[in-house]
Length: 503
Image (cartoon, rainbow, N blue to C red; front, side, top):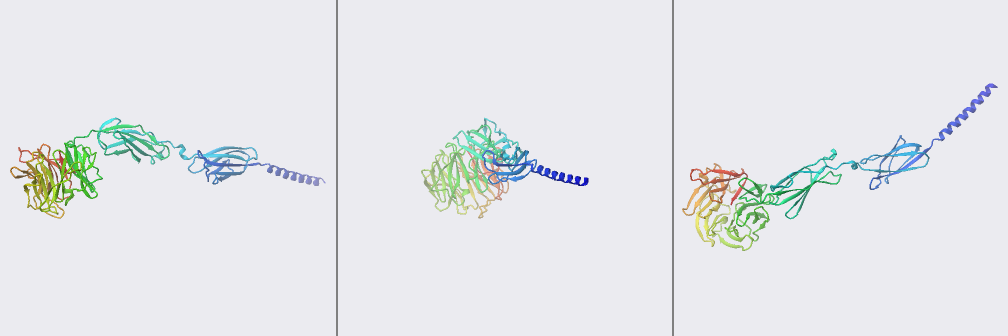
């Protein structure tokens, strides 16, 4: 009986225990967290944002409209985290006390929100308010970005304004901390500023600084240099301070300065034709002189023209004809035509206007003839004819009683117009004697002396000397008339130049 009683009691206890266990499990309460993820500032919904809690419960991803739902979260305190590549992770605290749904909103900021802008650019050179700057100036500045990842993105914008016409020049996307300003105007002040950009933050601007370009120099030397297939004209003084008078992007050659007019005339290619242009001594105020009758001949690089003494007119060749034209392009007049159909290549007008020297040749550049006519076209004197080989030059002395010219004494002729031993001759129109200046000045063997011009005082001659191989560097040289020596000194003035002019 006692055993039966104990067994019954144990059975009742087990039933009670199971009942209590079921009651405890049923009392675990959960809640739901709903929410939305948007971009901070614009409230644009963000999709595929990873949402999870700490302590860990469930991980979900936001829908295309930015919404999400975390279900069956036991009551308690949680930290809910939102993560998305390109945005800063964000935490929100949630206290789940009841079974009610709790709604939250995440506003995610992109990674750039913590990005610092670059430092304000500090302008280094040229110094503020500096003067006598060249026409080509290198602007330099310093600037840094505190974010190492942005150092490769950092770029600059240079803003320049001048005092002449307030034209604003801008150059953007500069990756270096310097920029070269070219073709600046003489005597003009320039104001410049640099903006730095890291592609994330707004631009940061430097202070504005200014500098002034030197006044227009009284350069008396002009010569030609090559840039690829183009020629361009350099202006220089005896100290070697030079600047390009014409653009290297346009084919220009044969400079001729006229002091009274304050202009430099030169030849330039326009749509395949050769025309005369003029500019001021600083290269500004460019004007085309010839239009309907371009300068023409068998070899454009050999063609030449000449000012009159006052700078009001220019003479130039057009195949077998010689024309005169006013410097403004008006008054085109035919003044001479060759009788044998030969081409006029070189010409020079004496200072008193009474004589014009001409060099003619056949279509191949040979069978040269050098002679002098008066303004009416009458032949006054023949200086060279019936000589094989090339000839050139032509420049009157100030008094008009002497004439410079060149001749290849080797007599060599070929289709490329190569010269082997071109020499400078000084012809005395009074005595009819030609003096070999190249021989007296000891021209190096295997070289050519070409394009001679008198110095302003007629005591020296400037010319181009180069190897007769046709590919070596061309240099500008001068020789001085020195009657005390049997050899006239030769001095190199400029390297890498040709077609010199000295006024």
